[in-house]
Image 1: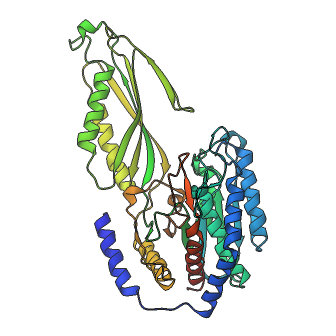
Image 2: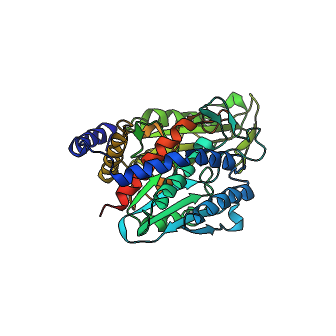
Image 3: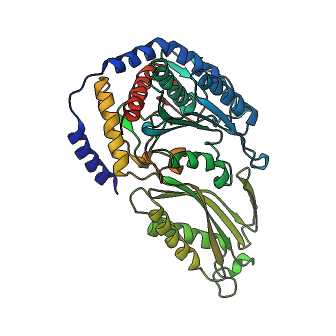
Length: 432
């Protein structure tokens, strides 16, 4: 389904579903509780931001997890810390759960890790003005975790979770997913299989948008071999074209022949070529040696592929393999692929969820909520469960410059987004 098609479908659903509504007495109590707890929510956010939890800081990720664990224990959730195998070099996941049979069964997704490791100079929560704070991981995505916690706290404080099934899943390695995925995402997928709806709290793209689709992510690599020889013989029958010309041909044909499908993109992120080439997968660093009078015998490129469906991914891979196989003289080439995040497609169920969120937002006088362009979003944990449940993402905090030392979180929006989340959850767990 293209962007235009799902936008049209959402407009039809939206028109059919919107009607003037007011908050119920119970919903007003939820809103009031969130207002009373908002200062505590911001203090909690500052606390967890100031604990470094870069993905490779395993102890730091677990420390943040334990802070959230204590908070979920405090609102009567059953909490579990799930360790990952030592050889994966990844911290564990925090799951918190209420077990019931009423309404829709919900899976709420966040993550504990950030991109800022222990050696990063960006480590602490600092106010910029009365509403904006510099906060490493505050926007992506400790703020989203806090919204989940304080929305559920408001519901629990009002006695509204007594017979609900809600699973909160905070992964410890979203920013650099542990391999194999069959282990690192097993618990998340298992939780999805016993849920009806998944709500992801990655960075919000604004009060007026939510994510109904995210593109999947896949890695690719091309390796080319040429014939090492004196450069005076290049292009002749015996020497051929050399590895670098062959790699140039491949990349050019990727650009001209694979590019073009809606929401399909692919990027060569690193390229090395010469007489000798070394590349370290762990550090993403490499070096090359070559001389201008020697025909290159080796070239390597590493890249990423983004796609909106498994079918689109498969089509792109077929074309890439065909191009790689059509070699210039005296060269050979191979392409390999590695899977990472699957795609979250813009399904009708996701759009129906968006219409419910939109109604909640209108009832709170927060304005209309529309589907965000999936071409502008990266992959996220919600993608791993999209095959099994209807879902929304982008429900977390607002801010700017995520993944950079300038990352900010807008504290003035946390209260409003927590209200929206709490009422969305309340309405879903009271829907058959």
